[in-house]
Length: 455
Image 1 (cartoon, rainbow, N blue to C red):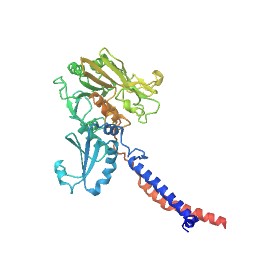
Image 2 (cartoon, rainbow, N blue to C red):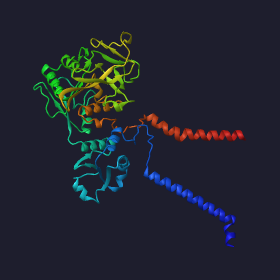
Image 3 (cartoon, one colour):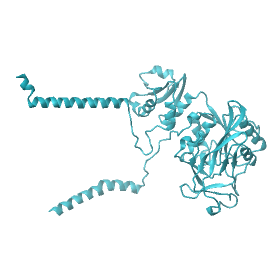
Image 4 (cartoon, rainbow, N blue to C red):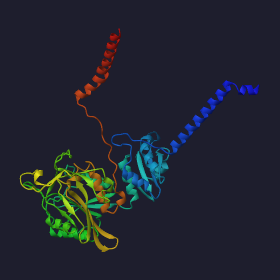
């Protein structure tokens, strides 16, 4: 009787069904386990809002020691920060995140001197840094500060019409100051007029678009500084002369750079193909060399408003090379004085022009070399241009290379893009009218027509 029950059709079907359910359950359990161990997400947003930048990936994945992030807030507010912090934690086993409830853990509040919430503290090797917001830009900046022992100082020359480091106008450099602060730099304004000597506190010296000539003593101070192992960035605009607007040729400084292997031309590079939507005076730099400054910028671009071209080659004691070149449809005019700029491609050669170069000076002392970067344009780092295409990354990569922080050279996190649609009053009225009235009426009318046709 038992054997007959086991051989019945119903019993066999029940056994098959049970086996099928067990196999499916086992497969689902296995898939669920693998998914929990190997998380993978796809960012389909247009501006890659949920993808960490190259710089963040490079820094976190290369951690050698443990770094801990403490996020202080009320438990119910953890989730928005968790969405971002979990991405950091997933990059490396060396980075740990702890979410601290400000009510339940007063001891940690006192330990880290936290007085407001939310607050994010990053700790590494007895050093700590506070992120001024829960964004990738702020978190990565704080991570850089805590990993790098000691800040760097970028000294900007003043007294010869250089870009204003404090100004918020389009031509000014307040954006550069803020960007440098986020990347572990202090900034200082110095003048060489009264005392032609570079302060010892300067990690790098920046000559940002001087409009008047540097005096011989100032040029000699810059020359001596680099040739003794210092680091300098020269942003020298074309010597334009249109009456009220005049930029001095700075022949003495240009000669020093020529001796180092970088020859600045007296011309103005224009983009005449229409590739630059900003206008012909914005040369598009979309060819990058193999130098560490631009190695990660392949496929990107930089925009140079009112730039001159240059030629770079090794000198007697230097190694200089071009790092950025314009598109092959660029044109250089030498008519940069008078009433206006002449744009006549038939009188010049259409080709790619070098607009930025980097070089090193051999001091003869082991482990100590001077470094310099020359760009034929200072406007690419101005407030009005810093956030255009890859300008910010190029400027900060230059500064990191000049201060021997090549491990920080990369494509950096961007501020979240505001993609809200701005509508006029008429457009705002049109949207509900079309979606709530016209479209439903069209569907109803189509249905009535089909019904009448069938009858």
